Length: 223
Image (cartoon, rainbow, N blue to C red; front, side, top):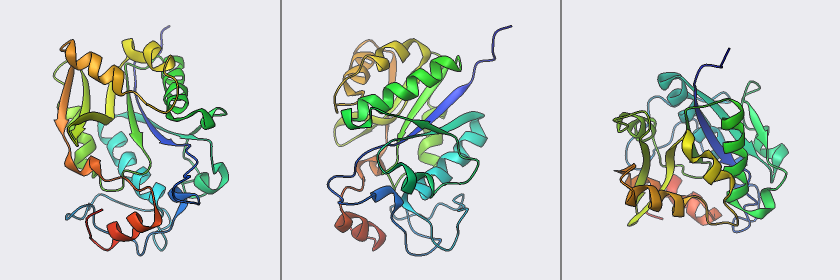
């Protein structure tokens, strides 16, 4: 008997954090509550509510999304494996990417391979450092899917980008990616083919690469 089709959400958290100089995703946030852009995300809940972390905040949002859309949430880890995994709940599911030093494409490939194994119908790729995105931002991607074979991605900074939902027909393409470019070429191709919807998501432009950017974000400043 074939396995039922599922939706996979893969949170990429395998990077080296070279510009940050430490495991940026394991950085503590000040207090259990903080603002995403200018709007607090009331759905956010932390397992360690006294000292939430960057990756814990993003994971908490995606866990809510996974519950609402019936998806299977996994975290792709590699660099700073122990520090990152220790920030997440004991029941979090991990994919270890042994090739994480080859760039983000290797983590996308690890997620696509897992999705194929699970016979998934779709795969959302999300990034661990997009701290400003809310539950509604992610849910809007699923709401934008008019047909089950439609791909949807975020649009910000005049470019197609992640988070993005890919169709199962894309998994082989995702497995063939190389280097640190990610899936932008595939997103552009699907958009030109009329097989992708771009959802405006200005908060997606906020990612955390340095300690200064994290401080500015938590202080409510532009970064």
